[in-house]
Amino acid sequence: MNTFAQIRIALVLSLALAYSAFGDTPDEDVYLAPDAFISESFDDSPPKPSVLWVTNELKPQIQKILGHDYPALRIRYWAQQSRSAWILEEIGKVKPITVGIVVEDGKIVRLKVLIYRESHGWEVKHSFFTDQFIEAELTEKLRLSKNIDGISGATLSVNALKRLGGLALYLHQQVQP
Amino acid sequence: MSKRRPAKKRRGPGRALLRLHRRVGVALSAIFIAICITGILLNHSDDLDFQSRTVQADWVYDWYGLEPAGELLHYPLPQNSLSSLDGQLFLGEKSLGHFPAPRGVAVLENLIAVAFPRSILLLTHQGQIIETLPDAAIPGNDTRQIASPDQRTLIIDTNLGQFRSDEAILDWSANESAIALAPLETSPAPAALKAKLIRSFRGEGITWGRVLLDLHTGRFFGSAGKWIADLSGIALILLTLTGVYYTMRYLKKARERSLSR
Image (cartoon, rainbow over all chains, first blue to last red; front, side, top):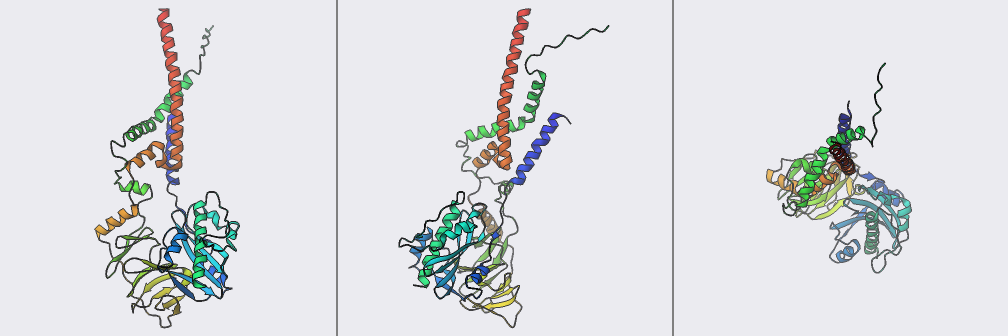
């Protein structure tokens, strides 16, 4: 085989490699099933679910927290005494991140990434990041009372989780004033 | 006694480099031509309106991952229709967002319920999302079918059996007398609707400018294509240098020959 033929084969192989690398789409990663999260959050005896309707009174505050309207008319939650659990979704870059949040006495006591669908930013699933939300409260300006350190390369996912943390605290105030 | 051949005078890199120069030049000529043509076209993209003209070829959208994979599921509804196309759900022509392929659809008096394997979407007849029930709010962990015989409550078939919802669709109870569900059947989507859904799925489309730029930079072939374009650029620089070197050498030899005559 002469050099010219070898170069041509190398070129064809390179293009084939490029084709195989093109358009790689990641799958959905389920870190914890939502029903398992609810069950764990209430010592394996979860209460019956309730719903909070997103009324015109709530919409402006929710819009302020999320930066956009909530994409549904009602939000399901599980509440027992002063504790409420929420399963919320927010888009990080292009796909929704499903997050479970438990609020008790106006403070976040548990935040866990349940399902992650983006190709980047999955580092937000780690407890070193999510544990920062524990004890966070909602300020009068509808912001988290604690500073949450970001993760380089996962800024959009970090911001999405911050918004969901604020939203869960606000919704908790509405169901347990 | 045999005559010894006089030793060749070695001047510079010699014929081996010239051979390499020729072979690399021929091997990469197609890439060089493609880069030059796309470069010229990009230079005139405003005049040729390449930044606003969109590509129509389906294979290009397929290559960019913008061609829907899988079949179009189409459920005719009393006032409208619900379609699912490669992870996108539509009520009529309105996109409702990203959802998996439905397992079934049920029409109630005030809402439409769409069952997915691990969630149920509730929406108004106008297409406003009421709620997406997560699997924590649904019995079982694999919803197989959904129906609403009375148009007020939902019945779902799951891996744990059949369950009926209350009228608020908040709570579920096991359906002791399980019935055979009559699910809403799918039907082929009208051609006009199918074309509109594919257009909506693709968004604004891909412009010729984008395709030309990706061909020019090699990105059209992914990250390896980008490297090939980079290496071709470096090869072109080296070919230019070796070409200049051999031209100078040729001219020098020609001058020496003309002086010796």
